[in-house]
Image 1 (spheres, helix red, strand yellow):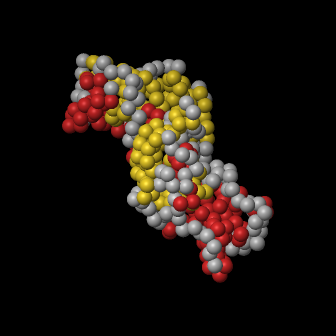
Image 2 (tube, rainbow, N blue to C red; image 1 turned 30 degrees about the horizontal axis):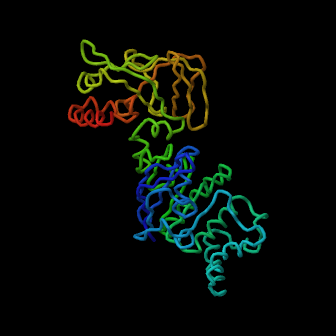
Image 3 (cartoon, helix red, strand yellow; image 1 turned 90 degrees about the horizontal axis):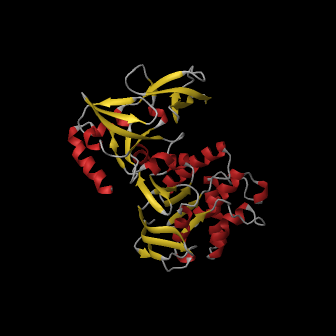
Length: 381
């Protein structure tokens, strides 16, 4: 097994830039997920690693070997596509065996290896069938089995679950994760589905516009988003983002959110932001119904969505829409007036100009951390 490294990779399609000076290192045995909206460049990365796309500039390494100029068949990678890409005229056995036949593996070894892989993926009873007689989940398992049997250095998976229904997607997520841990093969998985990214990846690379916005564990990118794009992209419903400003009061500073009541806090830390143009972000699940008449967000309930284990509210607060996620089935009615609040550590401040995270309110009202946070924020400006 091997690591994968991209250094300064740029890819142009005519005048369009698909990847811009992108660098990424994937550790040996790691499950790396590339996630982002359609057209952000994640599939281009995968195809560049596989050798299906020639990069305009930059270098790609598999292990210590530079592969930028190598043809695809010399890179020792296996790719699983969204469309399965099975041979319709071949049986399941023949589809799985195809990579072994291509390198002239003895027939006895082919039969043994196909049987082993088929048992592992629950396909041993379907080896005689053609792909057209299989379900979508079974076809995807055949495609994965064909990739596994090669024992490549790297697995590349390009949205392999997007054609499956919700239940099958959940099952296949678990199967792929379990299989990857058993094999220990370095895996690069592309998806636009944030649930897949958050549940499957050892680390996640969040992409937009051909640029990696943030790399980290699922916990890191969710609870410490680098910028407004990452904050808004990850989460369902997405993070609430509204403009805000800091103003002095007789006993401290107050953070005023557009269309809402003020949050009042001690002067320490916040006074440094009194002239800044800010965006405040609060995740829907971090808002709770509050009885405090001084602090929080006062609004009218416009929509109530009961989802069994949770209830999602759409709130109109001074012409600004807020989403609130409450645990369980809450007795809330449309047009009801409610006040919501969040704890300091769950209120994020972003710079409007750079879109970078300045810090949370918990960070900024702690004197020890304020100086470093403000210095870091100003360096982005």
